[in-house]
Image (cartoon, rainbow, N blue to C red; front, side, top):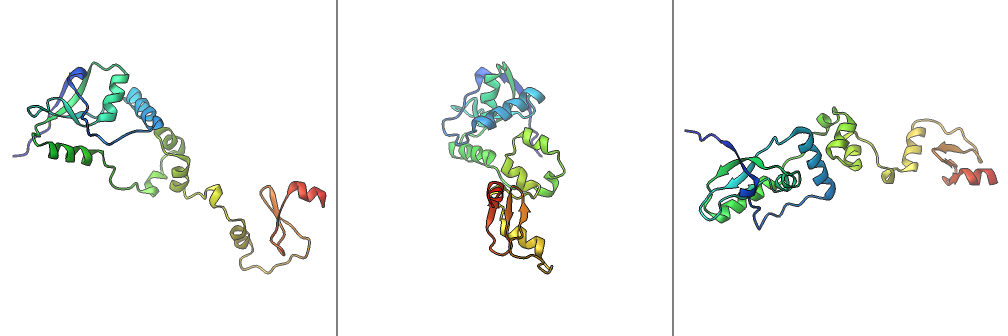
Length: 184
């Protein structure tokens, strides 16, 4: 027979963080979590231990607990587990906190970029999701070669090709900015 989980609401004052939780959030991550809780309410119960001597100790949901306290929630939903073995309690805490798996970038790219940013994806992560090159990874010579690939060069000494705010001489491959152009 399968045991079904039961969600109960209990006073937040009856809940205690454990002393070993290694998970931390950056200030931005905590603000993102707070924003989500304010927008959607509590949608995920805390997991607490009810074993003798461990009553009310959080096994899963420490960061949400902190935000619930900050937002002055009086009661919160919990799932109670009876885990008398501290080693097993600690293992479950780690397993619940460990981010496992990766995101499918193709499926993520179907979401609105602004939503992904609002949920907390960084600029670098957004670039990866949408297959964009980051500025520091941009290789002007490589891009120049793509333009000329398979084409006969029809340029002569002194010709310049515009590449954003720079120009490139195809013969010497020197980058020349607009100020240098005016001085020529």
